[in-house]
Image (cartoon, rainbow, N blue to C red):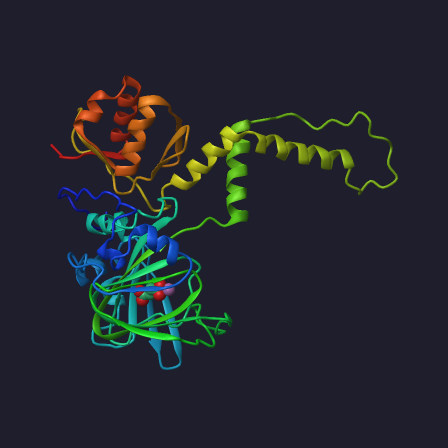
Length: 387
Ligand code: SIN
Ligand code: CO
């Protein structure tokens, strides 16, 4: 693990939907979602007033040097761009004074409590949509070129200055022979220079180009995820089929002798359609598969050993843990559990707040306590105050 913080993490509850917040420039999360989310950009001056940057340049470079972290180095050259994927040792990065380069480090919230805590402030959007926190560092004029992203993003300036040019783009054609996705004909409509603490929200497919103004430009991107319909269907069907474990064989006692052996038997087509319909009729299985897919830990994530022994007391979810629920189930790190009554209420509280106080833990049923202990031993759950 390249960097872990052992200090007690701040308890950050999700913002209340109907309270105005500085993070959104005085809008309530409800107003923001109604007016801007997936609709139009919002520039917020002084969105975050304390705690930036979340880590210093050296700490970010250390993360980029780690196998466990996804990073990229993008360098603007006189006649094009170069892209290099991490891990990146310090000696592979250009000198700080060389203009036009950017280091991008993905998933910083998995490694740094302060980054995880910042992400919690965006939990007015469902956890199923929140993805990760990327941090970029750029030398003077550094940037990744004019492009668009398929997902919503909040671009929070953490140190130095960045000039963002943004526009609704009609022509999405990309420059050929470039290792990055760079728009051929970027048509900016607005320009904003962001200072530390300022934040720009962009809906999907809004074109943007951000250049560092002066050196030491650090930008946090709060990123979102959205399942792609075909991919999600494939993943769900695979999980549901494994669960159903139906080994009924196709039978064709009515098959007649054929003069067209290559033709697909109509009965086989009907058998295939029936197989899919049976799978889809398993609503319970669909709910579990969806929860498991959405809480599956990211590929490079692993959980650390628990600190000390399990004992009844206040607990918090490890920052890498994904936990969600629906009407009848609790989902955690790719597993699903049926839950009802007081146990379900307790687990939902844990999922929403990511902490449970000692009183709640003490009152849990024996089954719920056993689950909490299992999760503690797997490193998914931690004591709020390490012994
Ligand atoms: C950056 O931080 O330089 C790039 C972020 C983005 O454009 O999405
Ligand atoms: Co972007």
